[in-house]
Each structure stands twice: as structure tokens, then as C-alpha cells.
Figure 1 (cartoon, rainbow, N blue to C red):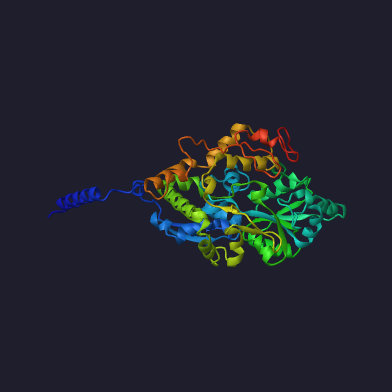
Figure 2 (spheres, one colour):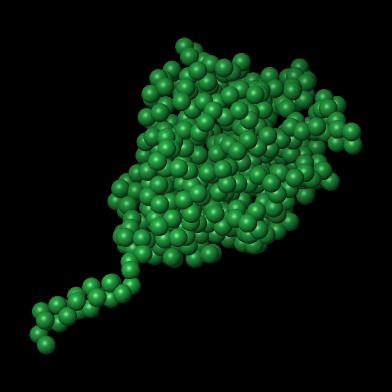
Length: 457
């Protein structure tokens, strides 16, 4: 048989076999253009979707061969994605937004996948807690009434100011959720967390501050608190529960109590990566969606197995019991005061994985409120930047293909035919201010503390 005839026979066999074995919708997406990938993460509980997608074989199901690597801090992680050392990473939601905007490092970073809701808390040292306690109402059983507002901290901060002592607190990065949540909580209690003025070269964020916020990497938070360098911090798990286990601090409020079901981390890739490797981008999004669903399904039945994975040294590396405290639906404040918080970590419920434009816009409003955005911007500017960074179009393709492959149900996702990318106005904030992502400037103007339209430092 000559070569041409052999090729024709082989082609006929392939066509015939494809008729016998229908092509899956995953196959219709096309082969991944890049199969070997390296993803970065920081040692926090909410990196879980990446770990589970790896451990459960979801990446391999997509023809992706992934290496996962812990990073030293958020800047190293972001730089790794920008310079191509990493193909993608577990990121602070503010990082792709700030990078695209040009605050700090300029780079076009996008996210097709929101990794989780909630997951953070604010912890203070034992000494500060003892000073706060007289200012906190008590339940009939003598335990504090929650949520604890920063009103209880304000007299303590004022006393330090009168004594000429700076009141130092830690957060993980200038554009982190933790920074904005800590600032939100403090300001809601009448404590000014300070302004940034990048147009003047001031990126410390301490102008007019009553509480001085500085950066500390997450795993170092408990040790920094114990050393007395800071009096409190905002961080993700397991580093609040670690303070309880080590008996060095008390978590006073969770971010679920500051803003119920707030967006937290995202999976970030460069715009260039998504353009160059569209099939790979869809496939990695499919794997992450499946992992998030597994983490929440059957009323969190898989969480103990997830905790066992996360406790490995190559992932979070904290003790099983420390991680389990929040991941399995409880949260311990003072030692012995464990309370049910079933939604402390949400990975899939409440459309947690969908990249809403309104989530991006909330971060932008806080950047403007505290001066990281120096001047007024139009509402259209906020909407346009959000749509450049948050990519529900990619998510939708991944989700629909999972439904067609019968790996997920349509009811698992938003109604894409009606979805406009904006959550309904959100009301569950600790200060009772309503957030409507469609009107960012009107929202910014509602705060007693913070820059408003027309303000410039």
C-alpha cells in the first residue's frame, strides 16, 4: 500500500471511529496549546481550589500537567506571573485590578475565576483584647456580643495617641482585601486608618492615620504580633486561628461580619496568556470550577479531606486542627468561645466562582476612598476597568461546557442569559451602608471617613 493510500485509510478509520464514539464537549474546546503549567500560591486556606484541582486530577482531565509552588510573598507572586516564571496564581483580588490600572507594577492581568468568598478575620493581641473588653456588650452567658465593632477599640487607640505611642496594625499587601477590610472596620468605628498620596510619592498610607497599617506576610503575622511589633492584624486563615492555638491573640471579627459574602481571592493570569492560549485558559478554569464545587458540595462533606490535603507542608503546612477550625464551619474567637460560622470559607455557594464586575468595582471604590486613586474618576471609568480585568465571558464558556459534559448542572451557575455581571445592591455591611456597584461615585460619597468626589490630597 503506497503512502497516500495508507493516509486515506487512516483518515477513514478516524472518521468512522468518531461516529461510534461521540466527541465530548471538552474535546470540542480544542487541545490545550500549553500543557505544562506552573501555578503559584501563598500558604493560605483559600488556595484550596488549586490544591484540589491538582489532587483530584481535574487538571489532568483537561490535559494539563501542573506544578504548584508556594511563593514568599504577594509581590514575588505577582512578579512571577508578569515575567512568565508562573503561568498563573492564587491572587489578592486587588492585584489584577491595581496592576492593570498601573498602581505599583503595570501589567495587564485578568481573572476568569473568583476563588472564594470570606475567609479573613481581624485579630488583636491579648493585651489589646483585655483593654477592649470593657467596651463590648455581653450576652447572658457573659460572652461578648458579636459582631464586635471597632467602636470598642477606639478608646484604646485614643489612649495610645495621648501617650504618644503609635498604634501599629498589620495587613498583607497595600491592595489586599485585608487592607480594605481592616480600613473599613476601623473607619466604621471612627478610627482613621490613613490616606495614600501616590501623586506625591507617598505610598505608606499613613496620612492623618490614627491606626498605622503596614505590610506583614501572612505566615509571619502571629510571630509579629507575639513580638509586640503590631497590636493587631487582618489576615486569612489559618493565621487567626493560629493566634488562638498559641494563646497570643484573639480574633475579634471575621470579614463575613464586616461584609457578608465578600469576594476574596482570584486566579490571575496575564491577558497575553489568555490570548495566546485560549483553550488552555478555558480548561484550567473548568478544573478550578470543579474543585470549588467539590469543596462545598454535600454541605461541606469533603472539607475534612480537604483539610488533610492543605495541612501538608507543600500546601499550607499548618496543623490539621488549626485549619479545620474555620474550614469545617466553626470559628474560635477567645479560647473556648467557638461559634458556628458555616460560611466562613465559601468556595462555590452563592456564585462564589463567578467574576462579577461589581466585585472589582468595590475594590476600586476603596482605592479611591483611601487615596490610591488620587483623583475623581467617572462611573464609566470604574465600569470599563472592571470589564477589562474581570472576565465572565471566559467563565461562561467553561461553565457551559461543563454542563454539556454533564459534569455540572445549569442550576449550579448564574442564569447567563440574564446575568449582567453586577450583583444586586448588597446590604450586609457592618456599618449598614448599601453597596450598589452600578453607582460607584455615589457609594464613595456615603462614607464619613474617606475621600469623596472633588477631594484630592
